[in-house]
Image (cartoon, rainbow, N blue to C red; front, side, top):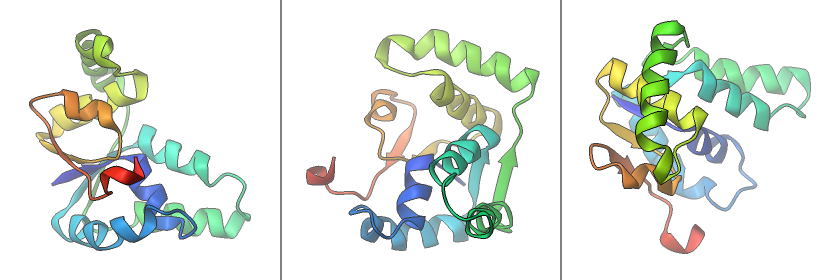
Length: 138
């Protein structure tokens, strides 16, 4: 299982972005092996697509939600408490609220790998960050 951050979903869906071509094959692999995602990240993806026509917006979100290999994790009080602890622990390196929920979700599900183009995750030694986007695209 791998956690897929919002930026990878956005790059995958938005063919206009330069990063799109770099995530096509990896995303197919991630989907085959199984993806962990929380509702906060799903909302972040939805926010990016909020200006799309209603049916296109829904189609993209349902494409994620209906993946048979998806483990979608709700944000409840237990996960929030775990996220607070992650926020306290990693705030000094640049982890914010949404990222702390990602870390909490990963901890709660035993997920050790994350696909992300966000450099802050590379500062956490216990994570394996997968990023197929070349350095020049950062």
